[in-house]
Length: 481
Image (cartoon, rainbow, N blue to C red; front, side, top):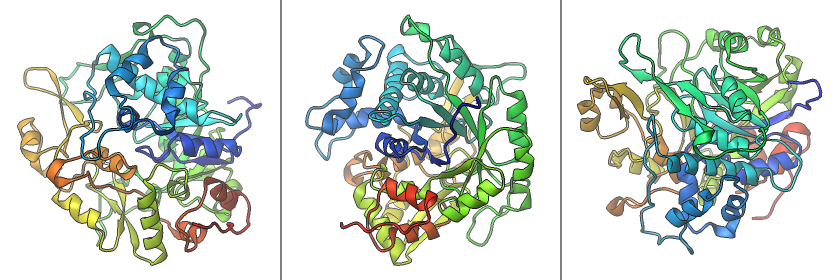
């Protein structure tokens, strides 16, 4: 990162699926901080918005700017429904990602991330980033290229070891083919598989692209040091995530031990030594419990450039969470009827995942009765079959199907379909016939004191108020509902 770069003090968390949407990132970037969109499941979210009629016409406005000819028109023909589908009509699904997919499947993903970044960058001179999960490998190359076509300023990645991503960004800036080593369970020793994306498959570009800055999300000094030394290109900084952060968390180091609520127990080995991190000479931001001026001051005293804030932004007006669900969470929070549990089993990734629970919440009961189905497939694991082919399974799919694919039934216990549940959280849940609409899954950081304070009995607040809350020690202004 060059010395002329003005570093943000506050980075808005890249919360998926669609919680960190273009509206939120635009609002944060408009106020001089780093707005971040979530790239997780962005293609499925995009086509569901089109099927809902593209209210306001924002998607279609941005689609007109997509530089690869004929793609936007083809996607509109396939998915746009003028006026939106009926409430009890199921969404049309995209084909699931595999190691190799069609040109159109890649283009839909490129277009989705292009549109989200493009809208986030409209109307201001601020900076916008995209957050992706390393663990969700298959869509990431197309998602990154589409974001770069829109001029994304930062790429943030965690949930794994993203050491190949800096080299991918270098390649894409010159429209060169990029590849990632593909994680496949049970792969024959000596066999290596790759995910590959070639821009020339789609068009012949005229000019290079801006190479975005890359921030790796880490939870250990050793990982930061490894990424700084051994990545395929330049790492421009780190986001240091504590176990209190929302969404997926790194598992505890050492043997997994659970407390009396069946949550993973974190210890001293899981605390990043910021003084050692500072020795790497790269800027870093502290995430997890950073939603206050006091937390910002502590981070900067330790040498950080600032903080990343997720939970406070997750429930503000501009976030993607369905408005009625946001209001319900804030009301329950005000009554003391909210708790956040770090579920060691919920995510098919195997990573601990935080889930927000409200007292006597009907959605919890609906999820418990939900018929298992895997029809989006972003968290599927690739594996080698007995015949040497690459196939896919998910521990949240029907148990008999998972076992038939060679999976262990024990691995299905407690698993939840995050892909569908998180889409439901932002108001785009699938219609399941007699089961009704897909029940939502709400994730949140564990430290809720600042959220209680900024909401203060209200059922809504804005992103601007969050920025003022963290950067300026003044009370949040009141807002009528």
